[in-house]
Amino acid sequence: MPVNVEGGVRTADQSRIGKVKEYLLGEINRSAIRIGDSLPSRNILARKFNLSPAAVSIALGQLARDVHLESIPGKGIYLRERPAAVRLLTVAMVGYGSDALTNRSAIQRDTYWRGIYHSLICEAQTHDTALIWIPNTTRCQLDFDRVLAHHPDCIVSFGVPLSAETVQDFRRRRIPIISGNRQLEDQGLSYVDYDTVAGFRQMVELFHDRGHRRIGALVINPSIGGAGEKNWSAFCTALASRRCVYDYAQYWRVFDRVETALAQDLTISQDLTIEAECRFACEQTLALLALPEPPTALYCWNEFLARGAAEAIASRGLKPGVDIGILISGCVEDDEPYSLLAEPHNELATELLRVARRCHEDPQSVIQINISKRFIDRGSMGSPGGAMRNP
Image (cartoon, rainbow, N blue to C red; front, side, top):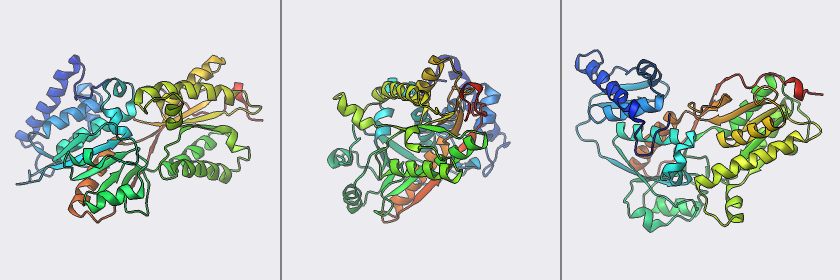
């Protein structure tokens, strides 16, 4: 369900979101939910009021203006005593994610950043945190004056290939940087990251267990701390451990956002990558299908690569998810019927803001947290289809 960047929803759902808040307040007022109790889960509330989990998050954010809530990853949201005086924490959001989240048209088309945005908004409201989105900060040499003008207590970076000098400059100012990606592990940068390397291993194992031996991968080059090389290594190592002995390089195709932007003399924007990623995936999938031994399964980094791959597969008279298995990394609310290595945005948001507060209290601390992706089988990873048999 589309949700805009102002936190609004379609008119038809606005009253139901209000009813979620009214219902929970009623339960609290009549002591059905007491201090220390957990609230019904987002999924339970979504089913009860016929809403998406993202819309329920908006209702919980509204509820948090009236009562004090605490979100604990893997356990739920709890009603707590409101602290007598909790200082509002100001967090500056920089990098690729910040650019995407300040682009209203792009976020409607991207479930990944839409999921992160709403989770961050909900968690900020329940943890007394002010978020400041600073666009045009996708370079490693951040504009110190522009960032510091907002007087942030700490900085959260998405997708910026931060240099060690940048990290140290901010640390000298006692302003910690928390990255939404694993990088500069040895330079004192705190991070909260989905465990991408483990995700590549899991992807290979899932496909292999279903009979696939030739596995293609359409990925994005994050250009962050050698992440692309780590992902490639994890892919190769996992395949080798399962004794898949083909030439891996033929099946690994990388889209580089920076190179694409430079080639077209454009800035790195979400609108650019949505179109360019789909086109890249379509072209590369056609090339993969033309190989003497084409892949029987495809891993796609995101929904846009999967969209382009599915278009190419269908153009050859094949059925995506049937003749060629498809697995993507993405948000649980992706509408496409492909299996997912789902990224729990609510856990990412909770941990980012929790680490931000801890780093503000102790600017010299270095905190590093990985969040595992979970597999959701949507029936698109079956054994190799008849049209694409293994030799």
